[in-house]
Length: 222
Ligand code: CA
Image (cartoon, rainbow, N blue to C red; front, side):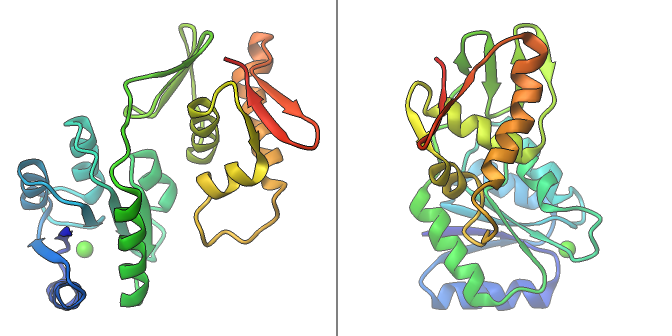
């Protein structure tokens, strides 16, 4: 399994590289955004570990350009604790996971293995249901000509429903596919987000795209 590690803190980078090699990964390392982007564009990687604060190009910019170039290798972003950036920004740009520094090595390895198992998803051009269109690559949603701004989580819920359009989807399915494994809050968070979505994609347009199936969950009307 090939891992690209883009991290400018030398000690952290060399510790991670050494540890990952000991775990059986093939590791390439870059210490700035420009080199990291070049590596990711020109070689195949099963997963990319991408620091956000990098010299040259920020991790966000590297990720944006990678997705723009249709490189879909799973990306785990390393976020600093200072809160200048957060995971929402990372997900908005198409990251697959994130870790806040400092993190323990075993958690990084577990997350990398989970991402590799999941593989680089096929990211189709545009998902459609009636006049509703969702572009997973550009992270945009529109109803007809009207662009709709969604938060990262709302986008995740809608994307999951659209990928399963016409099918009954249980709340738990949504939760396990949209929230990360570490979420241990209540299941009705899904209802809350369905409500947010309806206020953005349906109510203003007089449509009813998300049906409630009592006792089951939801169905996106195709
Ligand atoms: Ca850094």
